Amino acid sequence: MTQDINKSMQSSDQNLMSADDIKLTDELIVSYLQEHPEFFNRQADLVTSLRLPDHQRGAISLVERQLSQQRQKIHNLEEEITQLMVIANQNEQLFALYSDLYLRLLDCTAAEELLDCLHQATTQLLSLDSLKLWLVKPTSIQHSSLITSDCAEIIENRLSKEQYYFGRLQQSEQELIFNEPTTGSVVLVRLSHHQEDIGFLAISSQDAEHFDPRMDTLLLGQFKKLVAKLLHQQLY
Image 1 (cartoon, one colour):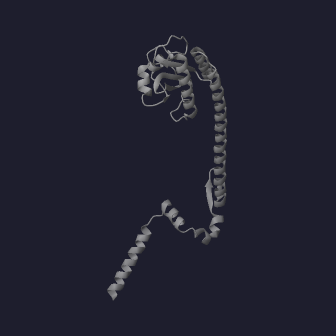
Image 2 (cartoon, helix red, strand yellow):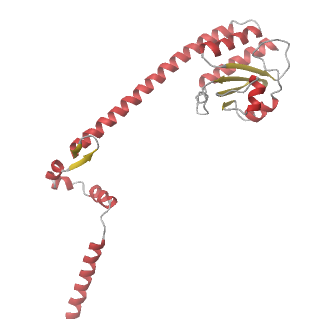
Image 3 (cartoon, rainbow, N blue to C red):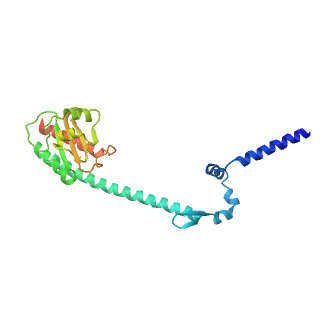
């Protein structure tokens, strides 16, 4: 009997020592509070007396910290809504611009006039740097936007599997397309009609971040189809 009591006391001492050896960590405290949400109900005075460090006001109560976090969340939501409104307004203006451009393109009666319209829309209405067109088949028309260099390798490397290429080009590619190095970003748009390749459009911007692979291509896709159809009609 005495041995059993001694064993029980030794076991109790070991348990107490194990409990004493446990170190409180943030994870343990968080886990305890999550498992015992009634803790602050039992310790109501703690909620009002607890002071938390604050970089701006020194020390604040738990309630003040909660209100501050809520105000910050509301502020962040307001900023997101403002950004969405700005984007929506920009998209509306861009849609109107594209609509006007489509009507102008449909009124063109010659390939040169079509290229004039595209160049003007790119450099003046969209405030971009340059527009160039490379054609798979030779053409007799003369225009400053036409690329005279052989760009078959570019379309093979950049557009063999994709309809668009966004980003930067190698210097050799820049010189073939634009006759000089470009410091910004470009978009290459593959043009085809009834599964027949016509060539590609190259549009450049001085802004290195303007043409980004994450760009939405909805409007660009409609623009690509219309330009390819009209070029096919005017050239061939």
